[in-house]
Image 1 (cartoon, one colour):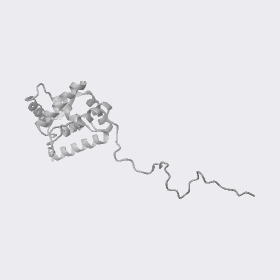
Image 2 (tube, rainbow, N blue to C red; image 1 turned 90 degrees about the vertical axis):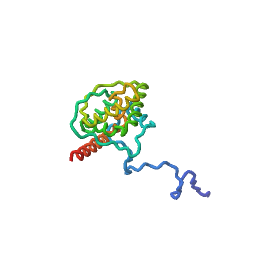
Image 3 (tube, helix red, strand yellow; image 1 turned 180 degrees about the vertical axis):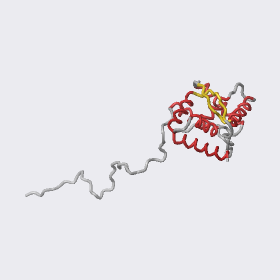
Image 4 (cartoon, rainbow, N blue to C red; image 1 turned 30 degrees about the vertical axis):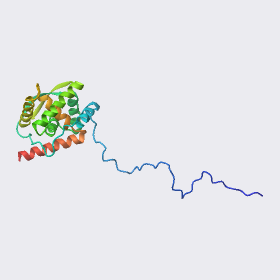
Length: 202
């Protein structure tokens, strides 16, 4: 009678450690810390702010802007880029903070530290407008009197070198630099501004 031979072709040994099958993802692994919290910014505004961040214009190291948030507030009409106006409203709603509070905090954070830096970002803002011609919408903001005075001072210094500069050029440039990426960052920006305001009033 012939012997029965069991073929092992195609059967992998339990000791075979060369299994190249893709490993299953660990469902218990913590989420990436880079995950964004809150609603993303509108696509067009994100792309414009990304382009601005790649610009050669940067704040010098150690050039922290003094705090201009103290004092009374004055009603100020400003022509905001429509994308920035929309982004302000969306972020403020998601972060549950007033639109004006977010706008003022972003302006304080994005204000250039010196007049030469202000001139550079204003020129960049005007070149950007020539390239894409964004629509602007009038918005009434209540700005701290010292913040508005500093904005006007930087704009006046720029007018000595660049013709027909206005307040909206610097405001939109500052917002493009400092508007947060999501609701969590918006809430943190307003909270930090509030803490600085409280320290200034103490």
